Image 1 (cartoon, rainbow, N blue to C red):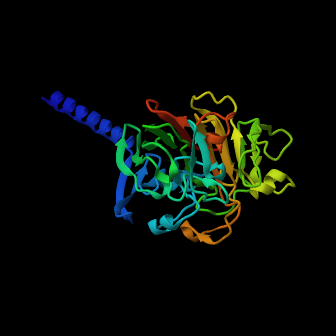
Image 2 (image 1 turned 120 degrees about the vertical axis):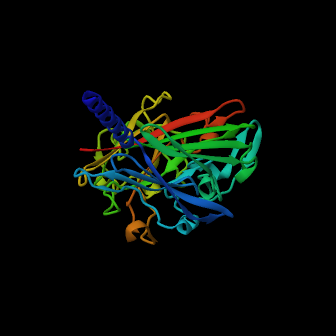
Image 3 (image 1 turned 120 degrees about the horizontal axis):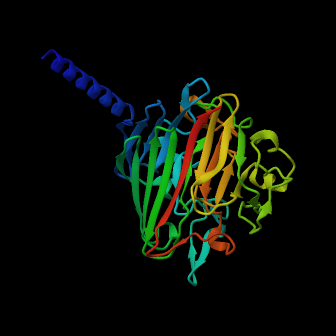
Length: 377
């Protein structure tokens, strides 16, 4: 009898250990009401992994409202710019943290030809079309569903972009799945189908600043991009069609380089962009998920690695932030306060036959994945 009691106690102990282990790998999820937009309820979903990293995501604009990452001392701080209130995102014109579409980046003069027909889009960026138009995917309420697994948790967001929306052809069914993992990764998976041929180029638009809680600008943060070429632009930031080598130019980030090291050099391309606002042609982009870029902050020790299946990476260095926006933590966002690193197809691809195609046809599935992974060194 005595041995039976001991055995039973041991079994209960093992069960308790097993339960604790399962709890340790459980991503925590909380949901709170964030407000209303377009007559629909908007929520803010908070995901916390077992390390203490958090991702706050809202179904308005599929926006990552906050993302924390540890510094070299293990302190978790927010590494994205943005707002506290939904109202500010509704009025925002900077695309903080959102999913942009149908077409991320610019289309020249808001026009493109497809199957012999010319389509006209809004010109909302000087003479050009930018990030899906007047009401792109960043300004709609997505349907949301929480997804969870053994060591990840996230949000599945779906949206039907109807035929003719913002001038684009076809009913486009879009799915974006954000997942936070216990490996301190924010994974973004994109899927879409259509009933008519249409351009599709979805991307994520977080303004990253690894200093934490917006302490300082990003000029001392070091950028690496696995790209020997980039696409020069004209004065309206539309690619000229040239694929130009980065060697010997301020666009060479083939070795980790401080963003501020060459940003003020006399260079026509930097003058056009008022800094960096260009697309890099990623090396060995064969459609598989691979490490293609990184951002490192020597002061905090935070390192962000970017894995993607996309052929291009748009780097924007916050050139048009002028201090007029007060964001989270009461910080005023001034020039060069962020690194926007958008994995995507090339700008103006519908008008550039030598660029990789962005046309999705009926029967095909648009599918691509990008991962932002956070480490320290």
